[in-house]
Image (cartoon, rainbow, N blue to C red):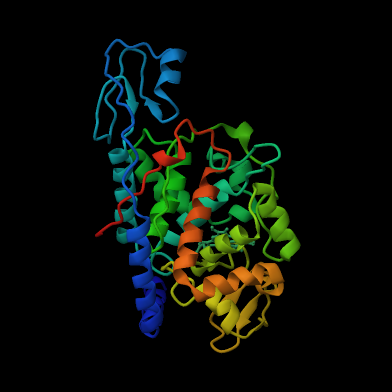
Length: 367
Ligand code: HEM
C-alpha cells in the first residue's frame, strides 16, 4: 500500500515537470534569501558538581534549561554536544542534532502512508498549537497536553498517536528536550525536509500536567463554512490572509477514513510542500463525492483528489479567495507568508524568555 502510494506520488511529480522545477527554483531562492545565521549562542552554564538546584538557580538558567538530577549527584546529560554536569542549557547545535535525528528517521521510516511521516508530524505540531485561545491565554503548544487522554482522545486528534510514537525514540535519545519543544521542532523539520520554506524556531516550551488539557472543540470542524474558520482562527489571533496561508498545509498528506472519516489526498504530491493546493482549488472542477461517508468534494477529472467543505469555503468567500489567487499565482509569496504564519502558530501562548531574533534557522539535510 505504502509503496504503491509512493509510486503514485513520484509518478505524479514526474508528470508535472514544469511546476516541480518551478517549485524547486522557488524553494531554493526563498531558502537562500530567507536563511539566516543561527541565533546568538545562549550563555553556557558553568558545571558545578555540588550545585544545589534551588529555585534561584532554575530561574537563572531560563526556560530552556534541563535539570537531570537524582538524590545524590547531578548527572551527565545524554545526547548533548555540550555534556556538562549540573544545569544543562541546550545550544543551537543540540537542537540541530534533534532536527537531524528527526530528518534521519523521516528517511528511514518510509513505509507509512505516501512514504513519509512528514505530513502527520506537521499535523501534530498544528494541533498542539491550534488550541490557543487569545482571550484567556490558554492552550497552545506550551505544555504538550495532548499526551494525556482527555486531549489525546479528542476526535480532532484521531491518528496523531502515529506522530507522537514516531517521535518517542527521539525523546529517548535527547531527554533534555521538552515534548512541547520536540513536537513543534518536528513540525518545522517535516516542512523543511519536504522542500518547504525555512521556518525559524526557538525553544522555551515546558511540559505541563493533565490539568492544562484544553476542552474539546477548539480545533476546526471540516464540515463547516467560512464563519466557522473565522471564529476558530480568529480566536487564536489570525487574520483572513493568515488563515488562507495556513490552509496551504493541505498540499500535504491525506484524510483517513479511520481517523476523520474523510478520504484521500488534496494534491498529487502529498509529501512535498507546494502551492498546488491553491492551484487545484481554482483550476479543477469540484463536485460532491458520491459515497457512504461524510460530505466531501472530489475533482471531476481524476476523482482521486479531495477537498473538505472548509477547503471549498476558501474560494466561496470573496475575501479568502483573493489570497487563494495570490498564492496560486506565486509560489514564493506563498512560501514567505506560510513560513511567517507557521512561526506565529507554533509560538502562540508560549512564555518565551528569548527574543524573536534568537530564533534558530535549522540547516536542511543535504543542503
Ligand atoms: C479549517 C481548518 C482545518 C480543517 C477543518 C482541517 C481538517 C483536516 C482533516 C479532516 C484532516 C484529515 C485527518 C485524517 O483523517 O487523518 C486534516 C489533515 C491534515 N491537516 Fe488539516 N485542517 C485544517 C487546517 C490545517 C492547518 C492550519 C494545518 C497546518 C498548518 C493543517 C495540516 C494538516 C495536515 C498536514 C494534514 C495531513 C495529515 C496526514 O496526512 O496524516 N490543517 N486536516
